[in-house]
Length: 347
Image (cartoon, rainbow, N blue to C red; front, top):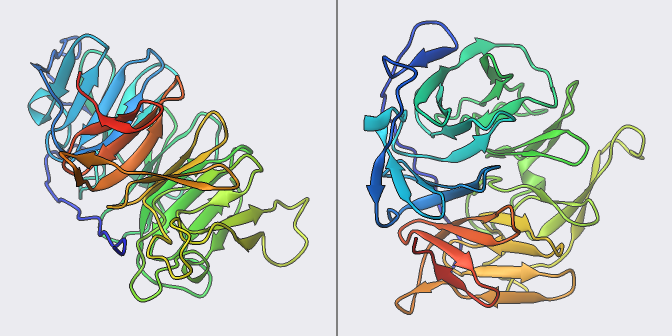
């Protein structure tokens, strides 16, 4: 079955604030918000994250976020101060604060300090720079071509310059920091961009998307393999050069590599939603409805993911602090790899 999923964006305006960086949703910032203790995760668990204290966070598209410390499962929603009940990304800063991003029309991010939520409201800016401690967040709403940079004080809303010879509107679907500290932005539908703190370099859509008869799915996943080559959720890999190694007017070379995941010449599995490199340098690819595929550099292994003997729709794959692999799904909660198969996670 051809992978063809559209990212449906919800638009639920929940909060506005004055022209500043942070607005407190709780009157008493020392108040401890406990959340609701629950027995199981919601269905639409799209994002999995484990923080530095080894606590798990599960982001839903419908019911907020869930915190699991190995003992208790706690659900936080807008009634507890969370900005939106749809969570698209989860990140952590060097101080242990957790941030939650949502694909919605509000230019804001939720921050959780361990006790309560505050809202970071973005300030429109042209302050493009790249610091090692910066945090970057997606702005995947409305084809605005914008992204957020947070320096620990201010959340900046930055407008991308248009790709060369293109003026198409686009969204940011993925963000990745490479081994050299460069930031990569996956877009829909204009390709992928590398920012090194000084300049923007693009691999255009025509060199990324491989849908043969349909529209672009967007660059939803970016990762590096053990050799330093890049994968942008397609069947190809890309060797990327910097100013010291570049030999032509292009800063990359595209290589035909694994082809369709199922080995067929005209495979429908020529793009996937998410990928991760495990501790053994294997690449794992998540498809929408065709399970998970592992590539060890030589061969492909297929893992079926089912609920009650029925294939389920997947969204993301995540490697935790121990190297264990997790799946986010559209309607079936979270799954964890047990070494042989992916099984549904039950706290």
